Amino acid sequence: MASLPDFDAQPRSLFLNDDVQQRLARWNHRRLAPAFPGPDWERALANDHAMLQLEGAFIEALRGPVRERASAAPRDPANFVRWFEALKEEGPGQGDPLFPWLAEEASLDDMRWFLTQEAAGEAGFDDLVAYTQVKLPDRAKLELARNYWDEMGRGTAKGMHGPMLNKLVAALELRPTIETTVWESLALANAMTAMATSRRYAWHALGALGVIELTAPGRSAHTAAGLRRLGVSGKARHYFDLHAVLDIKHSDAWNREAIAPLVAEDPRRAVAIAEGALIRLEAGRRCFERYRGWLW
Ligand SMILES: [Fe+2]
Ligand SMILES: [Fe+2]
Image 1 (cartoon, rainbow, N blue to C red):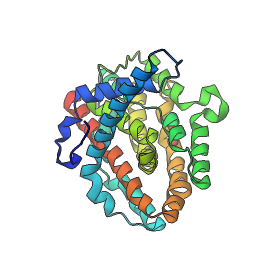
Image 2 (image 1 turned 60 degrees about the vertical axis):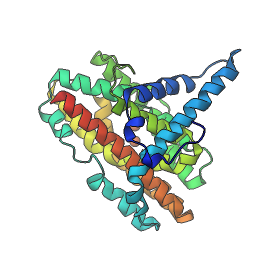
Image 3 (image 1 turned 90 degrees about the vertical axis):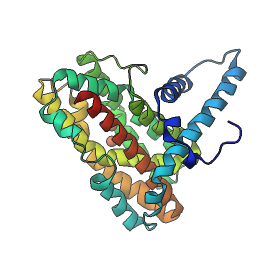
Image 4 (image 1 turned 180 degrees about the vertical axis):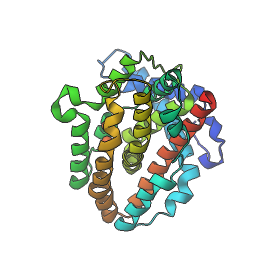
């Protein structure tokens, strides 16, 4: 892959398939796990290099289709935030019929399959925020810190968001694995991990994380309603009940305290933030379509 051609000219299926996304998912799982130094660290590094090239080519391929829409975003903070917030209604995958169906019609088996896919593709919002905040300007860093502290249950294990989702996975006896997860869901997590861990995509990560906060409440409310209808206990479904409400506040604060001042400081960031948000929404849209194809 020494001389990579123009990524836009490549078919998207080059990266959007089971093989590439499972390889990226397995590599992310391995490379982010705390470990010990081993005798073969140089060989591991050579493998990391090849995987980083694959990951970079993957993100460049995802940028292609969203570039035009992102470059049309306003560059002044107030108008940019308005543009960004309009993605809630007008962004790719928004208003997908999958979610009202989950709320009103899905069987418990349907819901279990959906949540297994979602859980396997979950990259860990807390860790993505932690990676993204490195070396950010103070005001944005403070907002990411407040958001992270909420993810950490403000210092109590019981309130941590990650383990909260694990409780639902355990209650429904789900077995999420990379091998049984559709590539669309893996691609979403792989794209989020790539943007948060590569500093050249730091502003993209900010946009992608911000658009999750913006759009999660609607999906969470529908999922929570479906779980309630299916008799899942309040304790088990707490993750979705919580995010249906809390992320409205998270989104307001993210846009006001992180996005607006960052764009004011350097208007070029508006385009990168917009690209990141659109990459994340497109990844979600592909998931919802694939899920509907399987479930309906
Ligand atoms: Fe959360
Ligand atoms: Fe949140």
